[in-house]
Length: 182
View 1 (tube, one colour):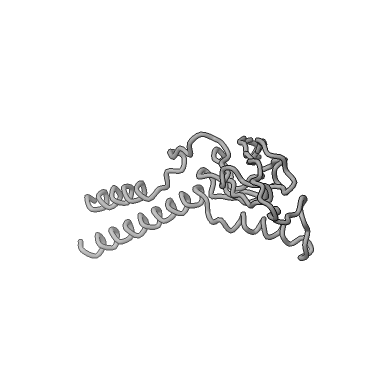
View 2 (cartoon, rainbow, N blue to C red; view 1 turned 90 degrees about the horizontal axis):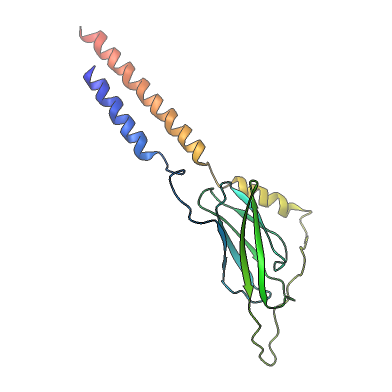
């Protein structure tokens, strides 16, 4: 009986050690970061939103060619890419991320272009472009959101089930050992 208690205690310690601390982690203040910090008109940007608990979100700004679809593992932030409009005046533009009923806000600063003779801005669409595929881009974005992997809830359930299975094996082994040696 003593070895079974020791085994159960060891199993509990192992389960506690491998249980993810998703709710204990602090993702920091909610907000939206843009990389590069001051993108030029027509350039691609990467957005990172903190403060979202879900796995998907949408970033909206007048500075962007189209809304940016953000994905992530939840709790650690959401990430996505978009492009800054080509015909955009320099200034600060609000960015709003909608994620699971929450809104996270930030700004993107578009600097004044450095004018050089003979250099023009790269060509860029000024609106979403449905180029081929019959609308498969929207389906691919939904597949990307599902391909992120299991979340914290699924990991905890898996660890609990594995722990229960280990306890059952130990109890059965202990019973077999007690029955055959008396």
